[in-house]
Image 1 (cartoon, rainbow, N blue to C red):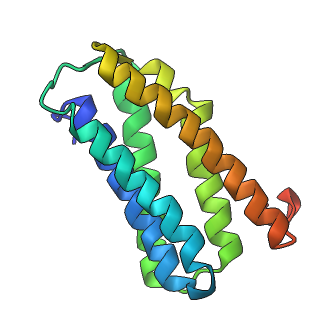
Image 2: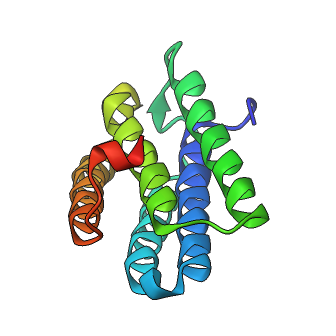
Length: 153
């Protein structure tokens, strides 16, 4: 994982998140549409990044970039394994998704990773906005499910 260009790691992370959300759609059939929508958006993010992946130097690395992306990848893969091995509630899935989406924003993933070209910079800007929208969607879903932040603790 450490030898891959950061842009490839970024794309793989989006694919992993999409797979996790798709798994939630399978495990929580009454919320399939909600989770499939999020999964499909993550797939689109990966595709948009994929269009730029030929430029292995498309992101200027710094001392934090690999640590951050590897931390997020590890968390997503661990949560995927957990979801594969046991039943998962919509509440648990929301909690995990919020952690993922908010951590991408809080860690300033789309600001720390400095694209070397305008097209990728535009992709990252769009992904940041969509990640913010995902957080809003998750909050709205919590309201519909009558969940509060305390319920997620």
